[in-house]
Amino acid sequence: MKNKTTFIINPVANKGRAARSADLLRNAVGLRRDAVAYCSEYPGHALELARRSLDQSRAVVACGGDGTAHEIANILAFSDVCLGILPSGSANDFIKSLDHRFGSDYPIDAYMKAGSVLTDMGRVMGEKRFQRYFLNSLGMGLTGRIALRVKNTRWMKGDVIYLNALLSVLLGYKPPKMHIKLITPNSFIEMEESIFAFSVGNGRIEGGKFHIAPEAEINDGLLDVCILKAVPKARFFSYALKYMRGTQIFDPQVIYSKVRAIEVELFEPEVMHMDGEVFEDIQGKIRIESVPSSIKVLC
Image: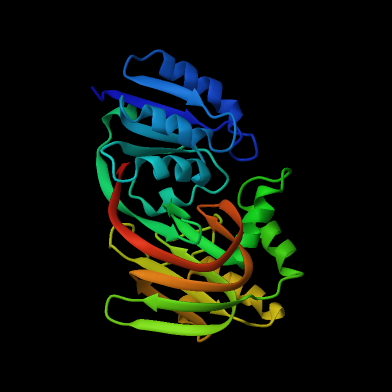
């Protein structure tokens, strides 16, 4: 019988600062018969723990950042097991688009009593049978490289780490050339040119403060794509401010559209992130599509 709520704790979330509350959470869960807690010990371990929990759990709660939720969501997709999120990462972006009651200090009893809602996910399919789901966002080019820099930065925390990564990446950045086809509900848009920033949102916010998809809804059956065409690097600082406000979508150098799917061809290997998780050496043809009502989320 699926009557347990499983908490999967990532103690290295937020550059290891989540470890401070891990023992408190495990002790609180240990007093209950309807809950169990595990700590992930290496990259991909949360995914393994979630898979083992499917048969006994009504819900699996990701106790970490967007990357922890990403791993667990890839196991829970299309199942009857709910995803819960106890935010303790650097940005916790997906939960900002969810109508929820949970915070990092919210009592675990709330997760036992919470209802659920069906939300969409994004699916990425690439060469060599690559397939992966994302909850919140995907980025290539600039944002992929920013995610890689964030991953490799150990001495910062919170939103400032994303601003630091942006400045560091921008110095030597050359916009990659892409062939892109946007498949909208009624037509399609096709282009081939150098792209400064390529972002796809199921949720609205990325990197803590950047509104990459300000009109996105997590249950509308569509993804929001935001493409900034090549601009001089000196002008990007004004665009960064627009992204923080969500006003970049009104700029003539930006293509913003709600889509069912996107087909991308990369002419050189690129860095891609999904929910902040970094995938290097992505190349060739990629399809990104909305997967409506594909995961149940506690709210």
